[in-house]
Amino acid sequence: MLLRALFILSSATTPTFALPVGTTNQNATLGSTVHIINIPDISSQACNTKQPSQELKNTHKALRDNPHLHPRTTQQIQVNVYSHFVTTFDQAYHYPPNVRKNLIGKQIDALNAAYQSANIAFAPKTTSYTVRDDWATDANSTNMKNSLRQGGYADLNIYFQTNLSSAPYRYSPASTLLGYCTLPTNMTYPNGHGGLTEFPPYDYATDGCNVLAASMPQSPVKVYGYDLGKTAVHEVGHWFGLLHTFQDNTCDPSDPGDFMNDTPQESISTSGCPTGKNSCPNRAGYDPINNYMDYSTDECYTQFTPDQQARMISMYNLYRQNE
Ligand SMILES: [Zn+2]
Image 1 (spheres, rainbow, N blue to C red):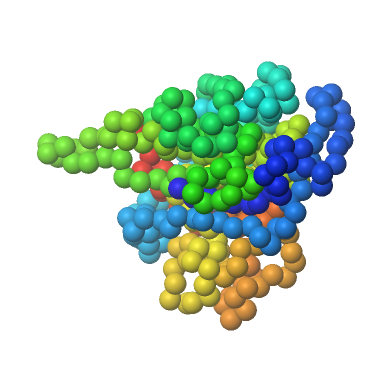
Image 2 (cartoon, helix red, strand yellow):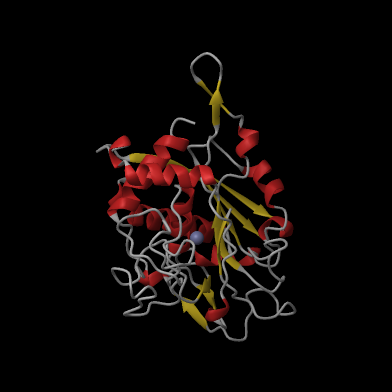
């Protein structure tokens, strides 16, 4: 489980999203009030990223060293997307059916725009809507996913949660995450007859991405700087197997980092959208601040590199396709 974690709420006693630092605008499109959440101290952002498994790192290394093993195909990969909108009772009034439908549509559009260069397309399937406090705060994620998850291991489930905040055992109740996602893992085993058998759906029930609903494009509740739907783009990159561009937070030449040859090494994740950031001055290239797998603000996120694009296809073929 990977976390792209940002503290965006400042007080446990403050009603969620009703922040004094926020401003209020009129949303002409939807005719509703827009609440903007500011991140009070971006330097305090933290990511309790669970390290990738050795198996996944071995796969990355093998694909990096032998890209011909899984050459890119010219055929587009199409991924089914099951969207789940989960809100607390308090926040539900922000998201009437027309708003929810618009948000999910715009979010799928943002995903398709970002992944077009990788020849990956997202096909929206069903959506679900749940009003339930413990699910919307991510206090009961496994239970939520056991109930809501659809499709197979090849299919993407995204849970848009209004109060993705509790991150049990990691943060105080006052903090809120932007999202987190599961990395792919091997979901087949040799069946003794020369083939492979897939694990039953129960074994990957938690697979998918959790995304703060306020990060969706045109959300009536916005996270300042993170409101163009790029959080989901980042998280889905993990779902395909990509690691952070600052993986391991080191400039050590012997460290494989994110196992990409075309993302300059960086030792510090990026905040905002700085120019000239170079956290590994003795290594080639400036920090990849525009890369979707860094931590920059949404406006700064503009690219996957060719290696990342190819790796996502390879990882999908290896771990998820037809499962
Ligand atoms: Zn991440």
